Image 1 (cartoon, one colour):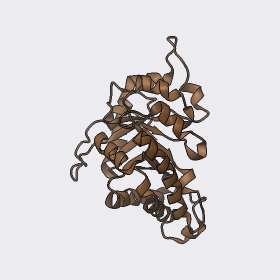
Image 2 (cartoon, rainbow, N blue to C red; image 1 turned 30 degrees about the horizontal axis):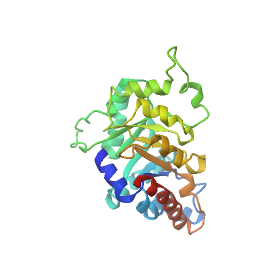
Image 3 (cartoon, rainbow, N blue to C red; image 1 turned 90 degrees about the vertical axis):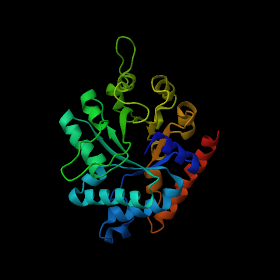
Image 4 (cartoon, rainbow, N blue to C red; image 1 turned 135 degrees about the horizontal axis):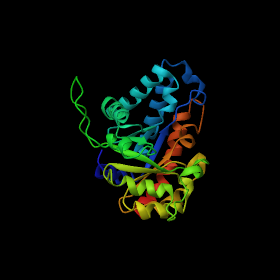
Length: 283
């Protein structure tokens, strides 16, 4: 999906909501555990209920890999279901990959070739040669061409977890913080048409500093809802002419109810966020 296509969908739906599919078998409604594939059954119901109110979905790979082959089958089925039934949705594999070049090439083939998602979260700690394989055209596999489409790297920049203070906010002798260096340097590898950045919603006014080094980049913003981030503050400091934001909510939507009515309640919660976003998009 191109940046233009993403923005057109944001305008059409008056939403920049991304629903996180962090599907935990200990939290889903108990009646779904009787299903042959409870993870996919939960995801399907959530997707069908919330798709009118969001523009993206973000399955977190940890919640699928934890169940081995069965979990990865559920992930694959989820991606396939989205692509076949909701092709306008931007699909983010939240896998936080990033390794030496040859390994990153294989990760790129996995997510952009095998699963054909739109975007992948990537950790930048190992530098350029661990990131650029995700931005390069995929080589032809033995059994045919990889999908030719616009793929995105979503680089970890400024996260909202407590440990982010250990590295991300440390300053060099010129006063540049590490997250600023990551964003500035990475713009030599990608551009605003294929690279986004993860910035936690709980950072508030820090979005002003982000926009100084990445004035036109799209930002994936986790942390509203259960983590307490403010949508209004994120938009005040982070929104740009073509929105430039994908704001993720996971637990506050998908686990809002654990009865047989869970999907309808998730839809209500997603609609509440979308209605907030509609006024912000309009303005």
